[in-house]
Image 1 (tube, one colour):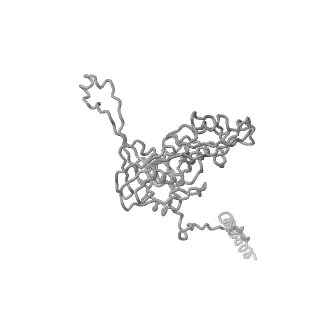
Image 2 (cartoon, rainbow, N blue to C red):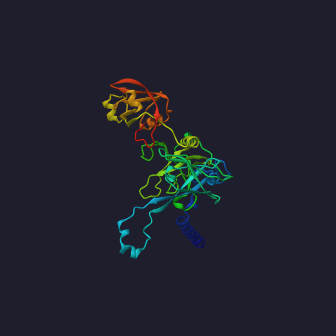
Image 3 (cartoon, rainbow, N blue to C red):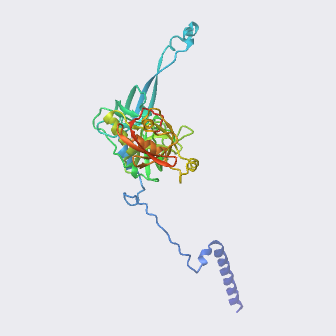
Length: 385
């Protein structure tokens, strides 16, 4: 009996020892209850229009658009003022005649977009402004001299033309359909490193009051845009032209995630006028306007801050001859409601010179209508309309 008790005691001791070790090192083995239920969700990484399991890529859009985006190299002769010390015999003895040059050549670069198989290229006005020589390099390594068809400083757009065959072109997207959050690609030649594609989204639409152009309606994007990208393409995820990259907001000289592009719808209209007429003709009535602030609205007893306050009427202008005065509140241009200075500029510019337009104003709380003979907007006019 004593022997059996010893065997039982030893077996119990060993069992308790094993139990202690298991409880310390692998406690989950002792659990008799099933673990908590967990719903696992498998994320399907199928691309919208691609094969199952693939990661979304925009390579097809880039491949479609890149051949139609060109590099533009311009050269300009700049006059150098002759310095008085150049006539000093001692100076000339040591340095010779190397400082006699009266001109210097300044080179710059930009980008452009082939939009017609006939060789028409959309770019920025500031890319080709005052250029004496323009060279265009295509993605297929062809290089050719270009000529300026026309440009429009008010929108910073220009059209140049090259004489080559078998040219790739980019189709216009409907920029009015763009929405904040849409994926976009910027294509250009930043810093002259060569053709580059960057990706971002549409950050905002209808950006204005930036002081970049006279007429502003920019698409804002965070796709990296740097010097050399000017005039290049902003494309949608299908590889169609959504805008012309024009400017950036920067404190360092490089991209800080705030870039601006001219919508393709606006660029197309300007391009068509330039190709047809060589320039852009806009309506003009000769007024200066400012936005209506809440304080101005209160002083004029308006229910809300809307319209455009006329601050100036150019002497002898169509508006002056019709009887409009500073202090009038412009509310309507040809049955189109005026909301601010941006809409005022666009609505008056859209009027056809030589026609008669009706403009409505509020004066002393009374609505007045004026029949105005629309003039032609002067180049680089300071007035808003």
